Image 1: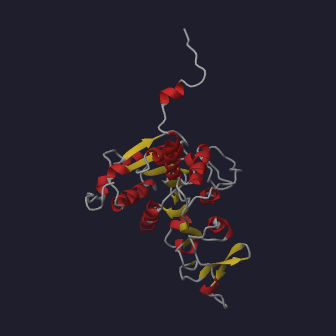
Image 2: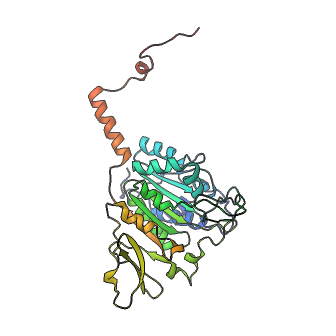
Length: 341
């Protein structure tokens, strides 16, 4: 790999392609694209080492707009393609851009198995709670009762919580940010890039055409402080415009408490993203606004575990050392053969 001493000094424009960006004006995808193009030059990685992979959906136009290598694959199968790339070329920095429909519906199995294997892929899941490219059908993350073109009387499906799903697959890095929270989003992207293994980042993103205001309680300036809580490793879980509320553990459940009447920051839960037990991060992922909780943003979990591509390389090395180099022609002609005339 090129050393930092010889690495060109990249700027944001070096990662901008010559393609016209074709998202709807005002789409949250623009903000995510800008954040990624701003962070990539900082990572100390040669531009030719980046590969951006996508499936199908509005988010999946991403590779066209990144001046890197890339693959626009088929619906739901981006994790499989990205896994193959990372196994074949572990030296590459593989990033996956996907949406709540692409990753959690048709691509659900591919997503969970990529995460459980801990393949060194950085996953950006754009969550706008709707199918945007196909014009406004409900998605796996749409809220219960969602009225959309495919559910005119309201969705009866309980929505997936993407972070809970990732943690259920024991992903080693799980985080969340918001499209317009640019400084926060860039910080999360840097942490994901530095992680060894699968990094799963949910980005709450607005679709101003088919689901405008999906996250307005989090993004409106007058509301965000009361409805979000920023996770910082080693710090107590405090939130609110006056920082007068917090999260406390009560038995096996979390609860919101006011910092008054003898309740202080010392009584609150202290965030530990390095907790080896995913159950802790899972509790955070279940903090539901409908139950009066703020939405956690930041890194929920960041732990170390063996990487799939490294284990495969070691297994191949060990078998080759024991049995020697393989012979494909001999393998194809092994056992019974037939001659067709």
